[in-house]
View (cartoon, rainbow, N blue to C red):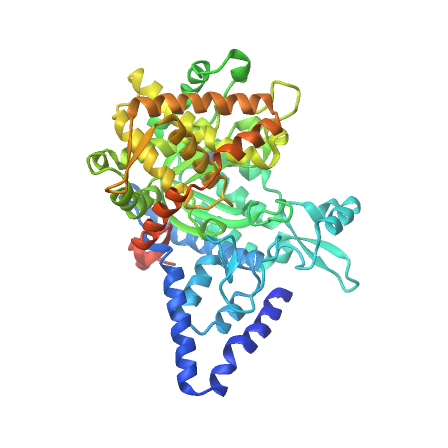
Amino acid sequence: MKTFTIGATLMLALAIAACDPPDAMPDETADVMNAEASAEAEELLAKYTSVTLNADLSVLTERERQMIPLLIEAGQAMEEIFWMQAYGDKDALMASIDDPGLRRFAEINYGPWDRLDDNAPFIGGAGEKPKGANLYPADITEEELEAAAEANPELKSLYTMVRRDDDGNLVAIPYHEYFEEQMQAAAARLRQAATLADEGGLRRYLELRADALLSGNYQPSDLAWMDMKDNTIDVVIGPIETYEDQLLGAKAAAETYVLIKDQAWSQRLARYAELLPALQDGLPVPEDYKQETPGANSDLGAYDAIYYAGDCNAGSKTIAINLPNDEEVQLQKGTRRLQLKNAMRAKFDKILLPIAGVLIAEDQRQHITFDAFFGNTMFHEVAHGLGIKNTITGRGTVREALRNHASSLEEGKADVLGLYMVTSLSEQGEWDGDMMNHYVTFFTSIFRSIRFGLSSAHGRANLIRFNYFKEKGAFTRDEATGTYRIDFDTMQQAANDLSETILRLQGDGDYDAVDAFVGQYMVFGDQLQVDLDRLGEQGIPRDIVFEQGLSVLGLESTSP
Ligand code: ZN
């Protein structure tokens, strides 16, 4: 077992700040302090609402049901790894927090920093979250790391922890060595699950994934995952996304999703992927801005999630996944986009509908439907494949050219082009949703996403769109009721205009032009702030936490 500097230092700070004083002070003072801590905890916990994560398991064979506990156990190993990557010693942190509410909030955040509040510390003495979390020594600077990486590129590898040796030099320790105990445990469970897998593609993937956890070579298992087509159970497991590493964006954080595929929906989705090239042709921009061929080999599927662990379970919950990240695998096999239906449903019921109840004109509320929300989210994911990845002005890729504005512009593009896709497919008779439902639901979701804050690319994209729509008259606000009403035709025109604007900005790759565009529209009006505050006052949560595991699934008796 390794020792963790941050955890130990914090423990000490907390022991001084929180644990000792109550004994030394009069009872009344201690009571007041405790009451303050629980009041604070209550306010923090109100940001989340609890949701039971279950699904219809009757679609599984008996042997598939027996796989679920094994996959969840494998997932728990990723949970342990993520705690160490994000913070350090979980047990020491928990033992140092007296208030049960604050302990619960630390669990949700995988550490003492509030992920929905730009990582503000909520435990006395926690200090600022290191940019590289616990993936690097806390005192590291980007300059030091870059310099050391010249001689040792492994320091910047996706799959290494960076530590200091006894002389203070930076060393890279592969995850499969640093987290050997957890990787071994997870690999053993995946192998056991593989023996129960009757579908060849899934069996092969589970075996190769187990190998990968132990070797650090993930590519063969990523390829096998893309080849797997007829499975009902899926598991996304391992070190995967790099968001936790705010220092370099280089290190992958551990996570797990255990998923049940919705075969009927997945077949419908496969059809839309085939229509992408035709939709690309119809984009409302000149030829040059749509000359790339969209990924026709992208694979779309709908799933119910039954277990989240680690990175994807920290703070706000992911409702759609696009993997793998390995660009070589992407070139060979494309990517798979997974829509997590039950998690989306939970956000719809617990967040979007209550927002509509406060901010949307009463007679338009009937147009807010789950089908429209699911469709909009699904087409958002598909729409990432439309448009272009490279500038048409010789400025390299759109991402390189637009730097810090690249991701908010890309998310904004996917939102409006998703709406364009729904509209086009509906006109072609490929989609039978009521367009008014899609538009009102889309508009309501803008408020939901702006609440993610400006540290989120989605939050920024939605604020830009809100102000753009406002300027175009796509909606009006009624003073008396404090509610918003969309104008269907104006909003449709505004969405098309915004699509064209974003596609051109991306294609031109002109950073200054994008900076001016963002500066013009990424502003918080007073009225909007007042209306968002009303959502908080009404106790509408910003995100969800899951009650999950074998007991929720009714599987405890089959646990090995
Ligand atoms: Zn997106």
